[in-house]
Structure formats: structure tokens, C-alpha cells
Length: 314
Image (cartoon, rainbow, N blue to C red; front, top):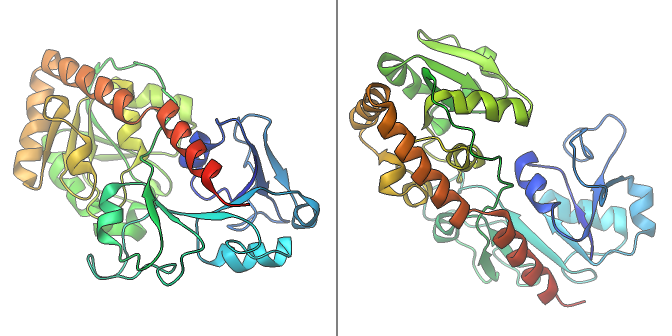
């Protein structure tokens, strides 16, 4: 199939474009949120950049929407309305930004475009109205088992920790820094100045995976985000996990893979335990990897996407 999809979330798009379809990624002068193209990522050649003018002539099979504004934008660029004149699906990556249980989804009042939730938690919490919904769990390319845990430090990956604040648990970092030195990775981490927290920066994927895997334990601090792909990557790397038991993270990490709790004292104690017992950390990391490969592997993710795309009416 020939699909129109915007480059919104790099890690999720990396997984999607591993499939057997042709992926048209809009690119506009100056880039920006509506035309980032590939952004230099080493994706397969079937993921190719196209201008809005080229899209007008493209023989598309479906549109993969990820933001409500893309519906009107696709209509302008294609000359066809997603959902009625060209098949479309809408991927909801996020938890509701309003009230946790009563926020109505922007596509709740229509049934022409199914909503694809990336976690069962998101499906549970969004009021999706009359829209058809389906859950396709995350799946990621296996980075390989690289865990050594040789550095007696904690790894945390958070994008824009200052702007997003309590949502991603930035305020929890000092507590973890009292339990172990923290290396903080991600976009915009240089804006954070906290005792015991070393803002490393945003690293290329291969380098990031190597550096994460050298740390003793991965800590997931988010309070109110969807299931972070960085958490799944850490698990597939073979890292033990200490995670705030919020949203889908509460069910994504099995008991033998680490510690998941809403009790910050219990979480920081778990960090200290893994620091003092590298053999335990190794065993937990092995269990984390096995679970993540079984439940968040790329093959099943692509199979479910193929099934959904194949079901769309022409």
C-alpha cells in the first residue's frame, strides 16, 4: 500500500516504516512540524520524502493521521477528504490532556476514521464516542542485549523535562539522585540544573543504546504520558527497570523485571538494591528483555498494522 504519514514521533515512525508498504513523508521548506520528512534518519528507501505538490499526484491507498489538524491539511494537499474520499486511520499517541476520565477525543463524533490507541490504558481513558477504536501495542526494532551495568549510575530518558515538568516526573529526579548518580538523556535536558543529575543530552540511537546499557538501572519517572518507547528500549537492552506505576507502565513491566510502584521511597530503595547487587540487576534485566521481546516486538506490531490497513474500505 502507499501511505501518507507525517513524521511526528521518530521512534514510533521508525517502527512503522519497517513494514512492507511505501511511506510518503511530507517535507516542506524549512521543515517544521508539518513537513519534517525523514530528518536524516536511516530508514528504508520505501520511506521517502514528498512535497505537497507531489502528494496531489500520488495514488494513495490510505492516510495515517496523528494530529487532528492533519485532516484538513491532507484535504488541502490531496484534494480528497480523509475518511470519506480516501481511507484513513487516526493514531492517538497520548493520554488525555484534560480530565483523566472524561476528556472527549477530537474524533469522537464521527465513525469514518477509526482511532488507533497505542495502549489499552489510552483506549480506556479517552472518551472516543461513536468512533471505532482498536489498540495496537507498541513494537520496536530489537536493539540487542547490550546490558553490562558496569557503571553504578541511573539512566533516565526524558524529552523537554523543564517544559513538561510534573507530567514526566522531572520533580522526582532529586529523590532518585539521592539514591544514585543520575545521567539524564533526551531533548532539552541541558535546561535542567539539579544536584546529582548529569544532563547528558540527546544522543543518536546507537550511541544512546550503548550508553544506557552501561548504567546499572533504568528509571522511568513519567506520571502522565503514554507508554514511553524509551522504557521498552531499555528493557530490550536487558536493563532492570524502576518505574512509576502510572498509565500503561503499570502493566508493561513484570515483577521479575524490576520494581513498579507509586511509592517513591520504594522506588528509590529499589535503585539502592540494584546498585548493591549487580547479579540481581542482571537477572532482572534478562527478564525485562524476554518480556519486552515477547510483548513489544516489531513483528507483531507490523502484523497488526497490516491487518488494520488491509481492512480499510477503498
